[in-house]
Length: 342
Image (cartoon, rainbow, N blue to C red):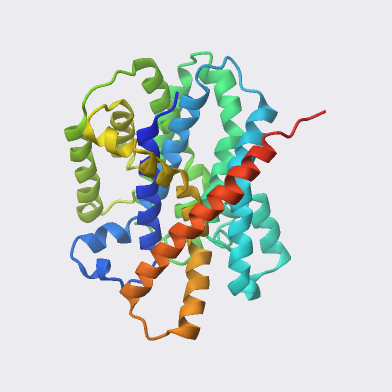
């Protein structure tokens, strides 16, 4: 089952994260309310995690059992080549930050488990480190729970989600939390077990979707949910980063996937779907591309204003991501998927 219209939403989340990591001198941060949204656009990663869980079920729900090696090989082929490429690009301008300890953590995808070292090297890679945990667990969950209709996973997932939300919001308001750019912040924001609920909630949404799929026009409902997400980011001072936004993301993903209205027709257009396809490249290389572009511009035309640099940056990032998707991500994915255990 392929849901073309949901692919484009990955691009929206990726671009929101890209803007959130750009200079706060950007014009978007000078607009009341809009600035509040982008300052909390890290919830885009939460959307990625939930959508990942949803898509895993949609992709595998017809199988009686998942073969471990085939699954791990396919996941590795999907994310690892660009994950490494992002590191190589970063080292062009940040080579002084390199050491073998950081290299081992990054390449093994274990950095998110060690508060204080989570954001080493190409720091968006922390989320891929968390995804490694999801991918490690999914075949086990599918073979022993999802494919057998074991309902205990529903109870366990909902309890885990509730516990994570309560803990996260109490922690950031406790004496243990020391603010941004501290070990405590890296723990509460990036520790893999605090994000596991998002992937599992996405799995449950996927199970519900494949069993209850029915096309209808949900355009208005989708717009209302999207507006609710924006208003929540502006007005509600809670920690949404660890899955709380699932209350909106789950119905949003489900309704978009079932929708057959005008919004679906737009999102399913080939150019829009293609933007969704290159969203992983956009996300994983956006920081190295930003560092490289800043270095080039400062050494050549350092007088450019922030807004002009941003437009050049977005255009460059899009072109680079398209090239990487076409000539690295897709070919490497096809090559690695051919690996066989003899």
